[in-house]
Image 1: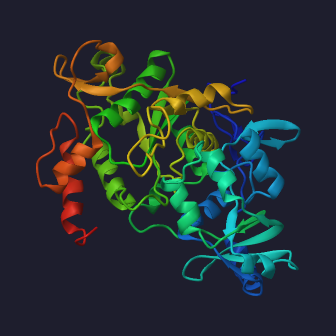
Image 2: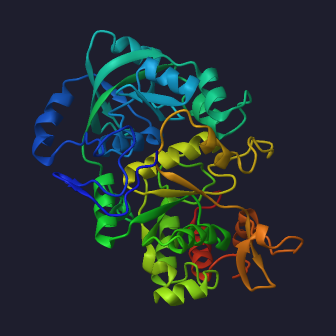
Length: 437
């Protein structure tokens, strides 16, 4: 059953919102240290064994803390971890909930021995700064082959997930699970204002008065086919009679080296909204004229600081879980969602496997996937549209690889493919990047 309300609701301690958090909770998990307790807990943490957390996993610590990973309160113990690998579920209160990528922190065998006779440790970042206290519930061997074959649905390891596990975490053969108490996350100087907790996002949605909100996940600068997926999702809800909004919700956590840096991407998203270019020319003019608005009037920008797994269908479900916890009722799932190919360029999954997986979940997930097909620019109508609406017609295909090549070569990007503001910001960033980057 999908428990989506038509009206924002409030609980005694804040906004419950349009949709409950994942896992049967009434409100998102909150394991963040309140300001008045920071000094005392810092002193306690200094006396504990220190376990470093990689830059890739650091954002996961903070998302356990603020509730984006509700109902979890920290990294998984062995039984929970293995059940996710086997069944893609977690159990809470005797009920099963969808969960497709297990989460625990990798440690070395030496660190595992260090923790044998203690019940707490402190977690520190790559610079040795305290980030959390972990109440240890379990330390157990990491079966990397089993993890990779379950999450990535292939026995091959020549893909970004294999690189993360076998190379970046190559010296770590154990996992640690438990309950976290998390210190406040430092704000990023450029885009920290967009990184909001689930409670803050739910408050923002309530202030807008919307009764459905669709989230758009991206890790890329937007070309017009990306934009159209967001526009299509928003217009689908509006046509169904909802007072709907949309959230451009880019992932700004750890990504691949060849992905555009988060600070650059955030500038492109800001420009799209500030210049009111988002959806311009591609939106339904009759619908928006009737509303007396345009697409940017119903779009908010919120960043999500969490790592990418590049795990295709399994990660699409996790992206939905994050967004349910943030308070969104719907999430756009497009072709090749969270996709990355093998190192030889061949595909790991089918183009629409990330949509199909939602039909076969073994546990509850309340957020609704809003599936979108191929989009392209059609000269015959002078805008972007779904390819399914133009059988036999040749479109101007929109390719991220072609856009990247044009920018690298200093050529202008066709405005039918990408907005001038986005192309301008990307080109400037490429010029300023150190050579070899």
